[in-house]
Length: 635
Image (cartoon, rainbow, N blue to C red; front, side, top):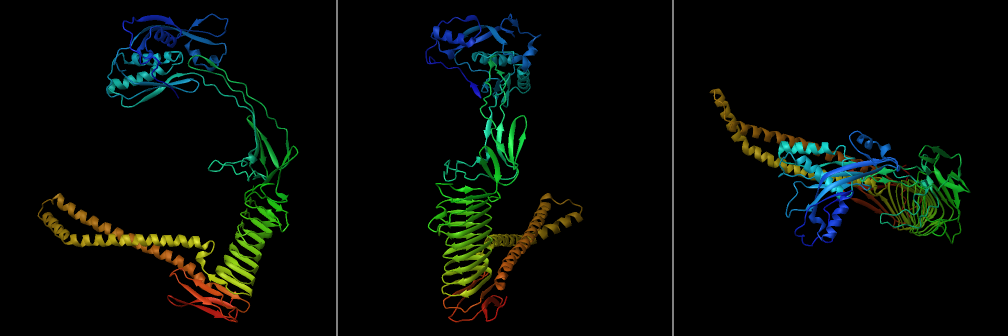
């Protein structure tokens, strides 16, 4: 809001002119007259004030018309927007004012603040609360006069656009008359004219390109993500044409016409769309909506939505990173198969529904999909995330539901089910692990089964530990946090129970004596004192609180047992888990079962030539376990 504060002048610090005579003047611009007098008589502008003695408002609707006075018979037409928006309408006012010097140190009766919007089509007054104000029959005229003075100092018209101001002032004065103070600020509209409506320029928006040059949270642009593929989903608006729309003129509280410009039209729909894109139109816009999942493809002047794409490579120079999102139904085939080159270059990322890479994945590259097939090898710093993963040679990181690998060479895998043809180093974490040929230096962590067709090496680790398997460790971590929290709550409740019990025991005998005293008084026809009744009620409340805490303690212990049962249920999977080796064991392969509660590890290191085809964990006693080795399969 534009604030109309106290007027200031560069001569503000000059001394007041002695012997100034009041001036009565007719003018169309009070503000300008005040400035003229301030300048001509060398008086600071803020030391001048005026009284409005009378004014006259006139108008004409055509430039060649005679001026007509605005009066009660025609004032209503100045509330009509169509009338006010007549471009030839002119309004002016003539004021008779008396200009004088302000009295020194005289404070205003009320603090009044005016504010206006950008175009000055609406002026609002705020009268600040005042606990010292007293009612006077002249108070209404004073407030209206002060507001009008502020308006005139800003070259605003008065009276014409102030249809509700007098009623609002009357409400405030009435409140002061009743209370003899004003206990809160009051804000109301002083002047209300016609707000202009800006024109709407036409525009062509390619929504499907919204992620191109998108800034991150730090305001930076990743130029590696330049939108080679623009994925859309069914129902997405891919292109939108905003139609040009004329605006509307306005008129401000100075009586000035506010003309708006004509809308700019510089776009056109000079393209066509395929049957995969639907065109919809209304009075404001034309939109083009995707009828299927895929990516937007432009061939000449025709837009289409495709779901299969073949490219040679993904690199910073050619495509940049590709983000088509997992639900886009876009299938990408990257054809680069040269063993000396990367099909997906260093630092690149690809996100799509399905991806088929014939070659290698470079350092720092990230692939996210529902289904991913890598025909070459993954760099040790590359990451693959997908529900279904198929990799030829894996040296990086892979995470998904079902992962198939031809050769694992030091890579890491985290999944539900992992199948590997040959493993010669690396780490696998899964519910179920199946390896056809296991060489050396592989760590396998499972919750259900590890099965090896042929063991050829040493220094492998076979670990059954549900707490480290995808999907299990989140649940176990949550349960352990809950158990720790409930144990703490139980300890706190036990202390409260102990304290309350001691207090009850201490007050039980005195309470019985008070109770007996009350019974005796009632028998003798006397009314027991209120203090005695209160002592009994306080003791009864103490007992009730104690019983409630006992109930809470019981529920907390039940909750603890339920949590422990859930942990035991997960732990029971360890007793069902198996390590199966279809071949002979070699020395220095470690077998480990990890219990959750208590935290115990049971370990066995194999010997050369050992034949243990099925290895499980057995419970011997309540808290004692041992590894069982069988020479026959137990599947």
